[in-house]
Amino acid sequence: MAATVSAAVSLPTSKSTSVPTKTSIISTERINFNKVPLYYRNVSAGGKLVFSIRAQVTTEAPAKVEKVSKKMEEGVVVNKFRPKEPYVGRCLLNTKITGDDAPGETWHMVFSTEGEVPYREGQSIGVIADGVDKNGKPHKLRLYSIASSAIGDFGDSKTVSLCVKRLVYTNENGELVKGVCSNFLCDLKPGSDVKITGPVGKEMLMPKDPNATIVMLATGTGIAPFRSFLWKMFFEKHDDYKFNGLAWLFLGVPTSSSLLYKEEFEKMQEKHPDNFRLDFAVSREQKNEKGEKMYIQTRMAQYAEELWELLKKDSTYIYMCGLKGMEKGIDDIMVSLAAKDGIDWTEYKRQLKKGGQWNVEVY
Image 1: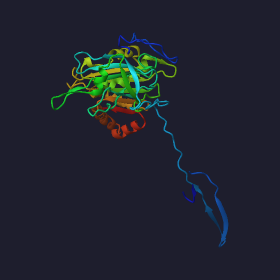
Image 2: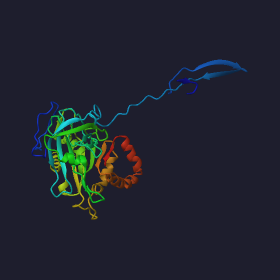
Image 3: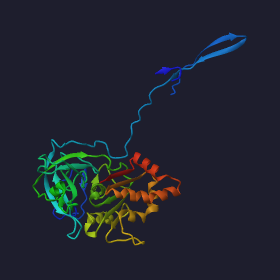
Image 4: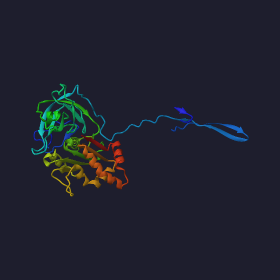
């Protein structure tokens, strides 16, 4: 407009099968102002030369700048399968991965997809439990973070894995309550059908930069997306991706018998000591120097200065998955450190989120 102005590696029962041509599993021992002309005319007035100038200003809507994502979003599929028409997979493997004395059971399960559910690391799938609710209607889907890399635990891009804690608790009336979907999944036998929806989610996708620093904070089954990240980084070979950065995992659990995928992560650290750091926080068994229980934020506080220095770099990404209280604990650590540098942590975190460097999935 113009105007004048205008099978998992650690599970003995699972074995790797054939691998796509471009990917392979590394054996882990089974493990305007637009310029326009100016027009003028000469006018004689009282012996003086007067210039009358008309400037044309062109006002146009600013060109839309397409936001370039720092994450692996290209070609990501979402909601291919919905509740009314789910994909029906088959349970291939289901095994408990917590000790008998752990406070609660957690199970690792592998479902067949035959390549029909094309997910990425960091996405989730929905599961619809068999049966009906108290009103006679099908159960609602429950979302679970995917615990396997995009090519799956067997390396053939035909499976998807979950990490699920069995939900059992006593309500205020003293009645035992069992979570419908978690118990359905933990009780699945190999060969059973399972209704799958999705995949969904882009918040937790991995960074594109293979040289990035990726700090992962997980409590309990919040480890799922980070297992998928770490398998891609350290247990697989890809023609188009080789991780050369730093992956730093903090995992918080109540007891050592609740540590999930511990052997896998220790194997990764052994093979890639310069690229992988691993810190556990076991709240019922460990304490810090002040005698406080070792929660994930307590463990992180021991590295507070180092973490803050990393957070000041454009190549650092924070990912959180697990219990809601975790993020506040991290905030409490960073507020004073940021203030020392004259930085308002709340605003700084907002900028990190905007740039895709602060990613949270809590429940």
